[in-house]
Length: 96
Image (cartoon, rainbow, N blue to C red; front, side, top):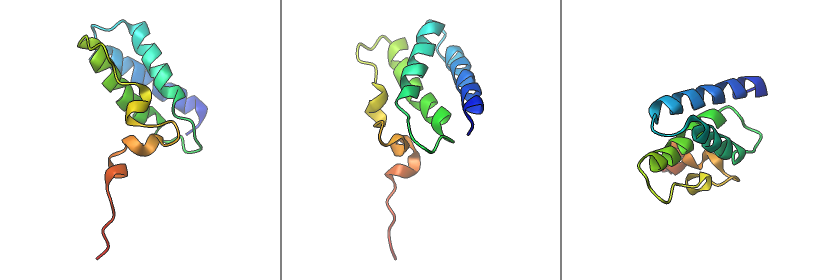
């Protein structure tokens, strides 16, 4: 994914999350998305916006519900392994 497409996709993520969490200040949404985005650094960029949206949604849900401990960007995925949040990452292959 090119950096232009990635930036556009992240703007869409911000817009979707602003709509999903109307009680959270839009600047706070942007801050969360930016913080989460910075944790995903690696050569494969195709799924970064989706991963950013998933982790940001968890953090904003905690913020919107008044939780004092919103999930950190690394609670679901370490910066070294952002794919850890993908559903397939938890599957194990069983040989027949």
